[in-house]
Amino acid sequence: VVARQSSVSSGINAEYGETFQHYFKRINLSDMLWKLLLIASLCLTPLARAQEEDQIMDGDEDSLDDGSPLDDGEPIVHEEVKDEEEDFVIKASPDAKVFYAFPKMSDETRFPGGKMVKALIGFQNNGPKNFIVDNVEAGFRYPMDYNYVIQNFTSFRYSREVAPGATQTFLYMFVPSEQLAGGSRTFSLVMSLNYRDEEGTLFTDSPFNETVSVYEIDEGFDTEIFFMYLLLAAFFGLLLFGAQYLLSSTFGSRKAPRKVIETGTSGGIDYDYIPREHLKKAKAGKRD
View 1 (cartoon, rainbow, N blue to C red):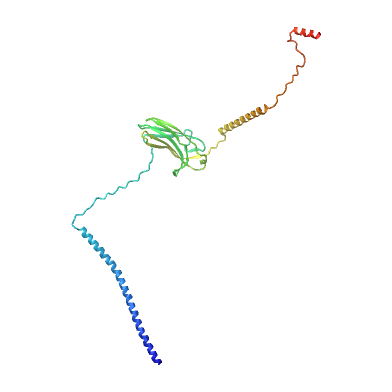
View 2: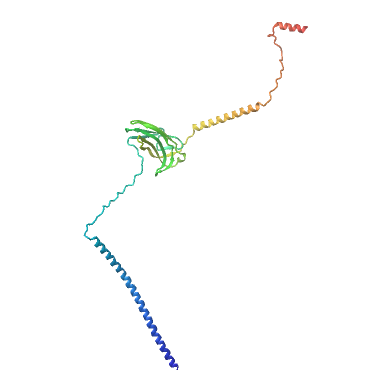
């Protein structure tokens, strides 16, 4: 019986094993088939697209090559590239000449700090039209960058008309700052004269544009300071005198006036100025 059961079970196992093997074989074949179809579709897709593009190109060539003359169309006009506009720069007029002079300066590259500097600026009209001198301006600038202003001086306005062939001189004054004095620092002093013609065209000319320095003034005795102190002392003395006068007049008027006591005359009597008749009458009265 045991041998029969074992034979039956082995037969059943063999039958199921063949069934499972056949099933797995079918699954493997179907997977391989799907993979082959996917690879084939990927390979055929670019070919189909290439064929479509070839057909489109052939159709375009057929439509273009229809025997009609080619239309070149309107010529393409290339726009000229415009140069960037130059910056608006005010220049000097060729019909004018500007010059300068520092009357009291022996060295034009060194200026005293805190002291007034006087400059004479001349304008010569060499053209056929009138020029109008508007103003003169100056300032200390940084030598490496003229756009950086270190000290800007006062602008003097003239509005003076200069006839053709005439020359006029203008006085300009400025005071360098004491804070810039000392050391080895240098500055660019730029003095500019602005003018215009009869038509309103603006011009500017810089007669002086040099690198300068500012030095400290070492003076032992300053007469201006001495007279200033003297004037202040006189002013305070006058105030004290006025205050004393007011106090004495105010408080002195409140005192009561002293009573004058008549004491008469003392000593001998001078009878020379009395007439003799009166003297005789006075003596006769005493006798009576």
